[in-house]
Image (cartoon, rainbow, N blue to C red; front, side, top):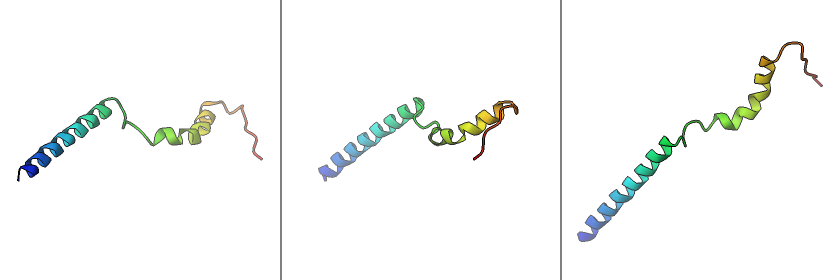
Length: 61
């Protein structure tokens, strides 16, 4: 029966450690935005085209 108490205590301590690591990661911005950086290169040309004047034309093949 004492093994159950030891296992329960160890599992709670491990859960608390993982929770603290998660809180630290959130505070450091680890989970802010993981989707936009991966697709930013796909839409960068469109943003540049919108900002540029209409006098600059792009060649279409």
